[in-house]
Length: 289
Image (cartoon, rainbow, N blue to C red):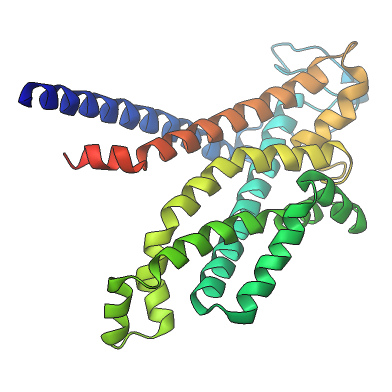
């Protein structure tokens, strides 16, 4: 019996080591990606907006590893700057929907009443429409632009976080430790900040990490449709849209930005999956063995 338990413990320890190794690797890739975003202008070999018609649509070479576009601009430089635009906009969007959705869910569920009913019905309306179609309609009403795309996606994405935070708060607000905090003289704000939020943020943070890749794809999709970043702004979806007619004749114009989107989405998705595994209660239990 004890031998079987020891085997189980060893397996849990091995699994924990594998998860930690994966987490360290994907954190390294994420940091590398973020450093590329932060120092994009210093990394670019050329001015991403400098035009030279004599170099128009040159194939990849030593001078231009990713080729040039129809205006003779260096594609590698534009991909790096476009990655900065896409990732920065995505992280801003995820931060907004996480903060707004969590605040709405926690406050409404803690205090209840009419506010809770109204906010939840609004979230039902937002969830009743196909997300990207709803975002396209909002972005079109705002005449496009990267800020309009971020706002449009924020409008349709916050209800998920509100519902997660609401369910976590409802599960905690009538527990013994919350009652003890009230008896100790803690007001509602103190209880929310010191007790509710710390015990509710695990699922919220995991969801936000998993959403980064999805939001990056949706922002790129809006830009591809002309409802996001507008020329001459370098943004990956916008760059793919500008080169879609040249896929068969000058494929590097669209393949380069596509690979950048793919790499960024894969890195963020794998990091989110690994964080979810690391924070899984079963793995948490194994870390405490």
